[in-house]
Structures are given as structure tokens and as C-alpha cells.
Length: 484
Image 1 (cartoon, rainbow, N blue to C red):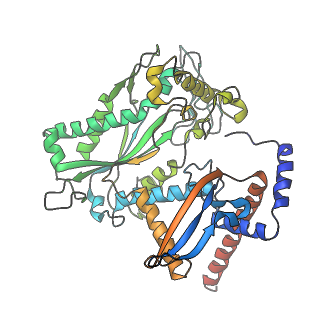
Image 2 (cartoon, one colour):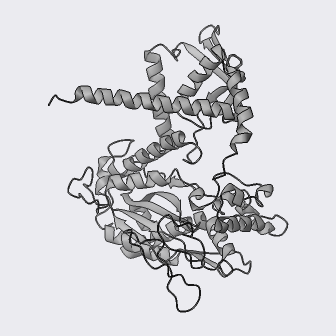
Image 3 (cartoon, one colour):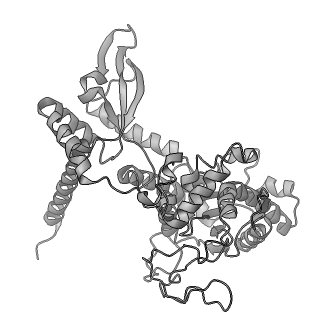
């Protein structure tokens, strides 16, 4: 969310960069950019790759980054944040969608289709209040009076969705900024505590000991963290009940749970576990001493048979496709949606946060996290790494996580893509035969991103490629369209 540099500061560097790009050097650089498929912050590598004859050790081919423009090989950054690299974030979103979808529908990624019959819910756990903030329209889009109060901070306006005051405290002087930052910092631990209580409450509601319950049922989940406009995370999670394989089955097999493991059992256990799960916050004089979930615990059933459902034209039902898309959408977002930055801050940034586009509320949260991260004043808070994660307003967990049994892994999905492209390259003679050759590589990190001039060229090339692809698709569609 940093403000763009003035045009006057870019003119000189851009002209110098463009002047260097000419002839063969420019052609090769354009080839590299095309292979990056729109990545805006490519990784620059230096090194070499040797292809050897596996039997004799003879060097069949040598590739070195020295032959590349500026001596660098550029590869995609792989950043999941859409604010940093839309292209790589879209790949991450698609991978997350397929991971989530596999755990809902089965039939791929090693997950059986029977998971569609398992009890499954879409649960949302939110943070408590740290002080009243400006509110927007309700979930139906209807404007509502912000905060009507007879006493205390009040606001009688009806804010629209684009109002910059949304999520900002009505009274910053009384807002619990320390409690807010600590809640974000411990949110991952609070989620783990919730999952422990969830298994206990499921066992208790089933009339079983926890050991007996765990021998018959396992709880699988996939969750994503989302920032509310007030700058605090909440979690959306798919929670599923699976059966435990017996000694004659693969221990990693996904099988239906016992008949008594019902949706009602799961729903009730989630709500009761969320009520009792809590952590004790360090006492820094803040109002919030006990870290708990907010009162708004939402649990929705994901019914089987919703794939490609055409009986819900208004989109009111919670379908499997919707859930997978929703989870994947928020996997590419971070705290910048709450008015903060998408990269780490340094001490010299603290006085320039407003210049970088940070809201007053987010700036105060960042400074609070930085203050609490002081190793001399608060040494017992060092494990929270609050200065390192100040730009995330204290939250240091991963945005998208899953239990081991939910479905496949992101690594496996990426390996599938790598294997596909490698097989395609072998088929066309672009890659060496792995049965007769050995490839040795050595690469070192040399930097990241484009120079101003390179960025202009890359953006223009990517836009032109997208336009040509769209034109090509339209031509194909017109050819396929029957004559009227």
C-alpha cells in the first residue's frame, strides 16, 4: 500500500534502462519475461546447470547465467499476496482451490468421493471487541446506523462500503490497542487450543472417553485467516469428521465415520468448544487479559450433492464450490486489506507510515506492536516476534493451513504441475532424458524485482500477450459458433 514514486524520480532510471535494452540482449530478456507469465517481482539467480552422461560423466551441455542479460536468470517469485504479484497469487489461489475442493468432493488428489457423505461444516470464529468501531452495511448490503448509543462513543451515520472510516475506532483514546495486538499474536495458539477442546467436547457429547473417541473418529480441517477491516484476524474453517482406519487398512485412508458422528454432534461441539477455549494474555495493564473468541461463532452445514447444483438460482445455499472458492480467495490476501502494509517495516518507517498510505488505526497498531517487541522493555514477549510481524499487526501465523488428513498438500500439487511440464518438455525434446543423463545445478540468490525501465517493458509485454490471447480465444469462439 506504499505510495507510488513521483514520475520525475523515475524518468532518468527508465531512460537508462530502456537504452540498455537493445538488439540480442533485449530479445533474450523479452524471452525470459514471457516465460515468467506476468510475474511482477521475479527472483534473480546466478549460477549454472551441467547435463552429464550418466554412464561416462561426459558434459553434454552447460548452461550459465553469464549468458543472460545482466548475468541473471529470472524465475517466478511464487508470492501468494495479490498486492505483491497478481500472477503468482492467482496460481496460489488456484492451487488452494484444488486442495480445498479435493477435501470436499474427493475423487482426486488421493481423496475418495465418500468424503461428500461425511459430516462437514463451514465455521467462522471471530475476535472479541477491543472497542467500538465504525460499521458498514449489513451482510445483505443494507446501510445501517453505525453505533446508536445513549452513553459513550456513538455514531448515527449510515456508512457505505467505500467509507474510509470503516473499522476505525469511534474513540481511539479508549481503544485497547495492546489487547488487539496480543490477540492477533496469540490467534494461532488460540486456534490450537480450540481444536483440543473440540475433540474433548465431541468425545463428551458422544458419551465416550477421549481415547475411545480418537480410536474411532478423527477431526480433519482446512482453515484460512482473514483480516476484518478493524485489523484483527478471524478464521474460516472447513471441519470434517472422518473414521479411523482399522489395523487391516492404510493408516492414512479416509473412511466414513461411525453413524453416531453426526452433523448435530459436530455443530454443538464447535459452539461449546469456542465458548470455553481461552488463553491468558501477559499482563501489560491492558483491559483484555483473557484471550477468547468473539460471540459471533457461525457454523453452516455443507450438504452433500451440491456440486454444480442448478436448483439454487439465487445462490442462497452454501455449496461445495462456493466454499472452496471462498477459502481460496482469502488465501491470497493479507493485512494490507485492513489499511496496513504488505511488507515488513523498519524503525525508520514508523514516522512515515501515513506517507505509505497506512490508516491512522493501522499505524497505531503497527507502533504498538513495535513497542511491545522491544527486547529490553518486554523481553518475555520476544517469542512473539512482534517487530518482525508489526506490518501484520502482530499476527504471525500462516494464512492457509490444514490438518494432515484433510486432503493433499500444496507441495504435491506443485509437483504435479512440475511433472506435467517436464513430461511435455521430454515429449518435445526440450529436456534431457532422466534415464541416461544427470543434471547438476548450483544457483545463488542475486536479487528480486525489475528496475523501473524493466517494469515498464514487462508490463507492456504482459498486457500485449493477454490481449493477443483474448483475441485468439474470441476468434476460436467465433469459428465454433454455428451460423444463424
